[in-house]
Image (cartoon, rainbow, N blue to C red):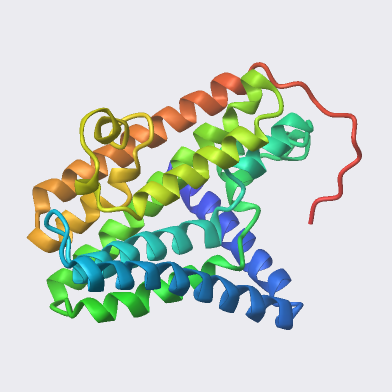
Length: 266
């Protein structure tokens, strides 16, 4: 059991190294993508700066809390998709085009091999942005830093798990690339909003069908309140989301039809 785990870990490390080396082959593009995402995040944050400058704190959220929210979501998103970018619309495309054949014939964990076989270079910009924005929060106590790091990692795990679920819809409805893309965009967008802005049905949805609150708002509360119990609850959500993602993926795999296209995978 342990030897199999070490073998899979070694294989995933090799995949990540290969993807990173391939991305850095074209260094100008590599750097421009990172800078582009960094600037994009900065522009989005400027709107919140203007908003809070005009209206002040809103329902318990001040600008410092928004810094923390952006830091957690950006760092978690960047860390997740820097390594596991073959989810969401990319996974839906592979399934719809019958391009899982390549992975099926290899003696590796299918789901992990698929999602870790692609990295998103631009998310390194998200990762860097999240770290720099976190410095603006002033929460540099070792416990706060630890809670920030753990919460962001768990938030990233939820994003990837949700991406597996949305991408796996292609097993059931055919070409689900657009649907999966919209679901992923909605997840990320609502994660960047203070959850106190929502109430009623909208708030319920952010904790259930579109669990964006567990990516942004809940990690913020963990760091602000140094709440270990809430952190354990977030870990439970990660286990639940990944349990659902694994179940949906392998249930859908039974419906999978091989493609006839000749693919070259590096």
